[in-house]
Image 1: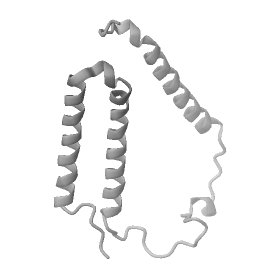
Image 2 (image 1 turned 90 degrees about the vertical axis):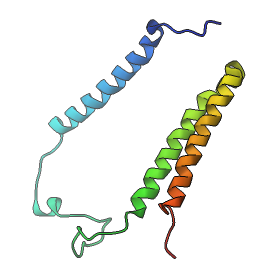
Image 3 (image 1 turned 90 degrees about the horizontal axis):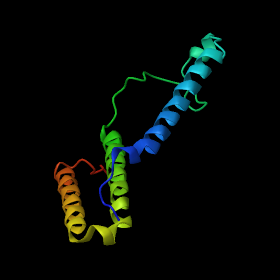
Length: 124
């Protein structure tokens, strides 16, 4: 099996990407152009899950919520990067094992850095 790939092998992926992008752009433009444009005081008023809004929406709150969400997304994406390695485990050999362990070590370094900065420690 040839381990080298030519650029022409990526044409189906490029086409799929272009079709998906075209679909997104087309549906967004169509919904904006064809959708109703009725504005009223009630429609422009803020809505919080059916509950009357009270107070200022600009009051600060803990950034920890955003940090936990970003950290979750970060580690979730990095686990996705491990899937191709697991699928091609036998073909990659020792080089693949070294690469994935270096990747995991890099993840752990970042994780321990977050722990040292107390980025995910919650107040009790």
